[in-house]
Image (cartoon, rainbow, N blue to C red; front, side, top):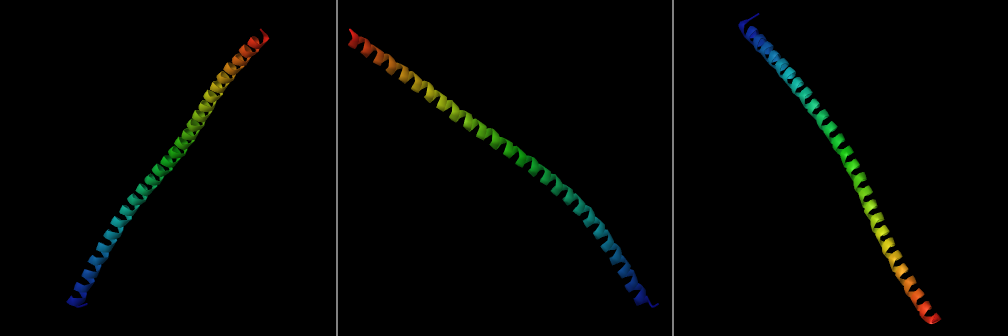
Length: 97
């Protein structure tokens, strides 16, 4: 083997080692990135669940407020009706005199 061939072979071996090192580095980096993606997906899932829970609570609160308003309206209507009944009874009492 000539000196030029030995030099070429040595350069080739060095480049192969360098490629192997780069491959291992990229493999570790890829594993770390996959872990981060997994963590972010879990965070996203938890956030989505929390959003759904908060939306359900909000809808329940909205419904409770609507019911409360309707009950207040009902109480007010009942009071107005009672007042009208009393006025009618007064009128009937006056007519009976």
